[in-house]
Length: 295
Ligand SMILES: [Zn+2]
Image 1 (cartoon, protein in one colour):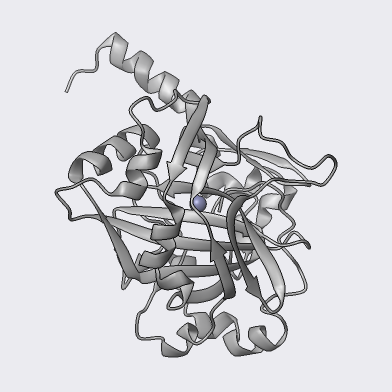
Image 2 (cartoon, rainbow, N blue to C red):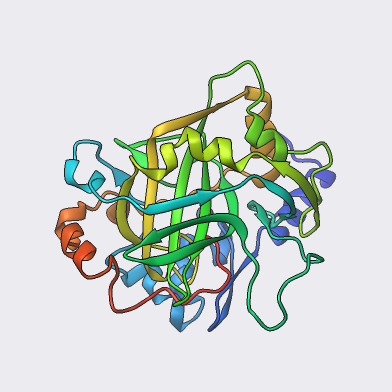
């Protein structure tokens, strides 16, 4: 197919816009899913990103549903409310929902959270933000789902835990949760807008309050690929969306995933002892010190 000048321009601008940022307390890493800032070069972006190549507990992974003991751990005291108001940001390769900027926060008391919380080993984790990937980053028995949503939680010690929810095309009707995020006027790349009435409680009901999730210790899936992230992948509770919703989401955030086959197919038992992790409080000594991060 011949590419017209306008197409070339569009492609070029998309390439430029595809460079996104991951913010950590230590550093701000500029990365992309394509070209010289793409996944195969992430470890070169800066020192702290070396883990993207050298890490032994990297995410995403392929989930072998026959690994049984990994379901015996679950978060406790899961509490959730519907979200009255939040901010939707279009960060080029994702749509991210976080607490609104104008809302009243306690002065000097740190970050604001969305109304969801759970405990791991007596520590409370609060919901910082959630965002979407098309297709899914995790695979189940080697197969991607259409969409993966990441809810990024953090505790007082800056440790990160991410709850993953899969969505597949399979409904004529729009999915109500996704509908509350995929509003009519999606902001342009790098733009944001206000969202209202997000039915988060129903979503938690649908994933059985994270009580049947596949859990493992992994990493952020974007630079600096920080490890020590406790994942809860709700592979047994896939949510269904309409094909129209899927197309809209995909057309907004692109179709990117990281092909890290060796890591993605690592056997959990080779690199970590899940049960030892529970006794030790579910974490390594190296916490994921990330204040605002993409999961
Ligand atoms: Zn993510």
